[in-house]
Amino acid sequence: MRTGITVVVFMCCLCILTGCGMLVTSPAAGIPDAFYTLPEHQSYYSCDSGTGNINILPQKKKVFLFNRNDTLFIVASDPLKPFRDTVNYVYPFTNKDQTGLLLTRHSFDFDVFTTPFKFRSATAGIPAQLTTSFNAAFYAGYRSDYYTVKKHTLKAPVNLSKVNNAGFGIGAFAGFASANIKPEFVRNTITYEYDAVALNYGVAFLFGYRQISTGLAVGFDYLADHNKNNWIYQNKPWLGIFIGLNLN
Image 1 (cartoon, helix red, strand yellow):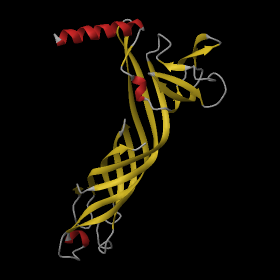
Image 2: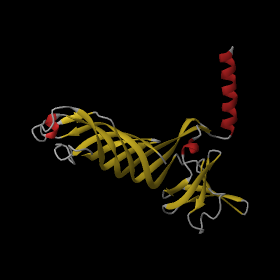
Image 3: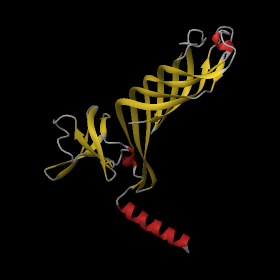
Image 4: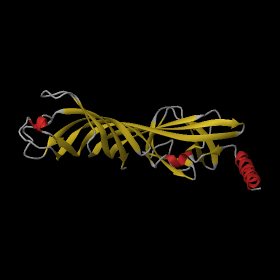
């Protein structure tokens, strides 16, 4: 009985939505309000003197987009035409032949991340090492995000739209880590083993999906205690794969 009611409700909702010609999964909600670059030949809707028009961009243009009720509205980055008010919009698609939209966004990026694995090359008679000690770092850099909205026709006139987002960036990081200190790691100047605090820093090449980021880090460690001058990895480069969380 419950299954039958669910099917009826779904069919009613489907009929209502197909009356508007589009079934969506709230794609515009996944696009933050910000400045983006609209691509060349992108179509958009404008209302001039009460008359609706579909326009085509002759070239790329930087605009401010904001989302209201799953519609992407345009505000110009300058007061010149063709975007002189917020009646203009680009999504839902105004051109029946348009099946996708690519938005480009450039911004400064701030993340926190950890590097689960560090690869250290052989040094001072010690073979190459793969370490898994605790570490955490703060990252700041420049990032480019690409948002795509795709329209897929399920069965005319019903369409399904969804948004995907991927970002790429480069920046610097700094943080701290735990370093396992053994006699052979400090040229046998001690006879005991302990876990020390080290500072780490370097550059990272980032790939981001939504709020999660990963990528390749090239870093250096600086031991912060009295054995720093004998530590064989002091300021020596390491290579690692990091996992992070976007803060902005």
